[in-house]
Amino acid sequence: MPPLVIQTEHLEDEAASWLAERCRLVKCPSDDARFDELLKGAEALVVRTYTDVDQRMLARAPKLRVVGRAGVGLDNIDVNACRARNVEVVHTPDANGQAVTELVFAFLLDAYRPRVFLDEAIAKPDWVSLRTELRAEHQLADLTLGVVGVGRVGQRVCRIAGALGMRVMCHDLQEIPSEKRSGATLAPIEDLLGACDVVTIHVDGRTSNRHFIDAEKIARLRPDATLINTSRGFVVDPGALASWLGVHPGARAMLDVHEPEPIAPDSPLLALSNAHLTPHIGAATRAAQRNMSWVVRDVWGVLEGQPPLNPAPAG
Image (cartoon, rainbow, N blue to C red; front, side, top):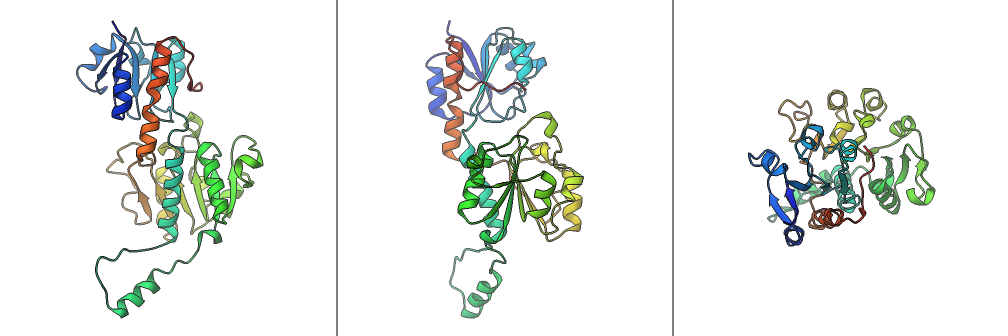
């Protein structure tokens, strides 16, 4: 019998069909009534963001050999627990880097370049009035951008911001060579937060990054700063951010990631006009979705006894 692989979330049709030609692929969400029975015989799982692979699930999967995460972050997968059971974990570490980077600059332009789209002719006085109302206070080249986390996305952001003429500061736990940060100035996090017009967060999902941007760090931001987060929702303390936004109406937050997802109805950010929230669309491009879906190649390779191409780092 070909190996049983459970697909719990969406994959692009081409990638799913490719895997189905080589194994017995069953599409079944982890909250489906059939899931536990299928899990008993599954040799592989292909998941995305909303399937938790933890010790409890692993205990119900005696034949499991590999978990494929169609995406970058591994917050929902206990990698160490998998490895302790000789279950390999593979992912697609740069599948959506370009898409997330583009969203960062879409946010920047939304924040600093106001605009409307006309769907009918308007009288000259209204035309003149609109041109005055839509005058931007700053060009991007007037601003200082702070990049927190200089990994794959952070490096792209540094490069593009520099090309736009922005002054760029950055912070990372590691010493990042100048060429990888496109000449951005390395700075302690405290200095960066106080000096930048815009701060964009690109840190990873390690446990120690929970509420990394806490009340103390948020208080260091300029009163008219823009905070962008496209990394992980739990990195920013939402209560502290909401309190700060409430007393600094000239500031704004632009958040694509949240904890929990969907956003809770009682989130303190929902009522704030200077909190701009999007439904985790950083990877929502056709190219990124396709790139992530092709994790199936690595999943099949592991089932065939090959070393993984993109093994997950230890959790």
